[in-house]
Length: 548
Ligand code: TEU
Image (cartoon, rainbow, N blue to C red):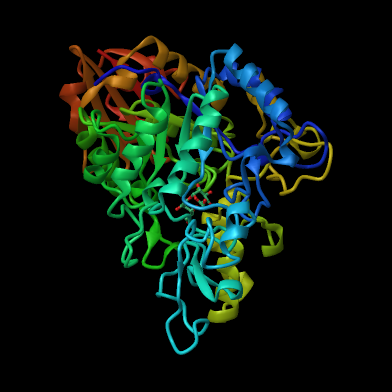
């Protein structure tokens, strides 16, 4: 596959509200991020994806944008943003901005105009429809349900019509059928490109095309036409990282977005592996997950995109629980080992690894006692629906919120054992995980065996050995094992072998004895003494990587 900087990159995702507060208002900000540029350089990451920092009333913490060309006041100013860009670029770290253009805030000027009347230049900027039933306001245009619970439509008396919001009420969907909307989007993208950004992460980009009859909103009929047009108007001829967030794509669909010669995107974030523990009722009905399912999904993506398009590699982000709590083991005994084991997985598959802030410290899920301790609109809307319409009690909902809630990822970054983890001198907008006195960056930097230093090592290896990024011909061993994940990739005659134990107990590797006769040079291990380890066994949560 063609070699590019963004395939070789390790991307660090920052959720600005929770990263570092420089002015004591309890909310992370741009100057706070800039003050940690050296920390990012020490980790070795080569790009940062910044979750939205644009003006926003924060119904969904910045994913509801009211002005695409302004910085959110709580985060600072445009000058702060320019200083951050310079601080990153000076250290060889590129900056990828979040592009949220499936919807805007209802406080965006376009929407304020659009809702006023069915006439006028902004009337068709959003998706407006008449209601069903006798009077227009009686029944919504169709029975679509919002991803954040409740109907996906909201009635606006001013124009006696309903607008579509796939997410919160305050996030009306833009009408991409309208060429003026598309021109606006391309213009704002060029605005940021001209300021020197190195790419975009595109929020739910596969939901922008809704057919006129409103039968579908995922991977809709004109989505590829729109993305190609966007690419031609804004991205073409520039050397950018582009990653589309695309729930509901399989490898065949993904290949249409990221196929090397399709002129669309560089990568997508697929969601199949995020569904391994979703029960019949979806994410709020979690069930135990099986390693065999996870391996089948990841293996399918490794095999089917190889030679066709590029993978993104992630196990958590600002919408997902902490990976060590979900896929590893966050007990005091196994937290560090299992976090390193999962890191080994992410950094030894084909694709670009994404590190979500705090992942490099092995940060864990949080279990706040009360619903009122939570902030997330998705959690709150779901809890309201469950209590008001399904008669469930708050106590019944807490286990699912503790396991799956997005705020697990959003508790402030744990910098030190100082009050509030050194994140703020004020009152944090969302509580800290009470484990910050033990789990924090200061402690991790001082401990050579920490999760942080293991990430540093994996990231350094990627720079030294192209096989980590580019190796192909993915091949699995012990595919039926419910505890061991073993796979090999190759490049120019070299072979990279990864051995992972997803359990706390020792596991035999005798089923792949012939492959392990000459495993090769040990590149990485989460047990310091792995050189002397029993070659045909893995200890609890052990990870080893060999190059031959
Ligand atoms: O997320 C889109 C999405 O479909 C899910 O990840 C969703 O957020 C949720 O977790 C489903 O359970 C993107 C952003 O990443 C998310 O933060 C925003 O809230 C959402 O779009 C709307 O902009």
